[in-house]
Length: 218
Image (cartoon, rainbow, N blue to C red):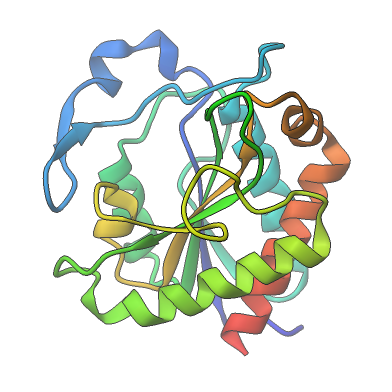
């Protein structure tokens, strides 16, 4: 049980019914630097498969893998049929759970010609100052695990070799544990979409994330 005694935070981005309460998700919150929406609906494939569902599927697989290996898991939502919580609340849930490491799971809605995954890493802004270097190491571990464990390439349109730094996301700005956000692929690209909607690929992403977590915490 390589993760015995460890606590891992998982934030599956968005939620399945965010579209049903625009007043709630459009409310402005303070992300540590500026105001942003409480949340969004997320993107979807051309066939209508939602990012919120993809995120939750991967998170569910990852949670099971982590528990099997001894970890305690803090999830920011327990289903895909609710609204929210706001991105600030998600950060608070994981911080309050005293996670040793955390990952925000997403899929992108990029240009249809673009492919690949991108790892979003935090920029120092006060609350997260102590975890910038460790978050970068965790991001490098995830990058390597995804390249070796899945068929998804690094992004052709976002960041540098699949790595980009963001200072406009509450989940990263407010983190007090090593944390990154992973865009697992581009839902608007047909090749990526075929992977992202595959249960087999979703399981591969979860296993790659678990491998990166084990490597990082070891």
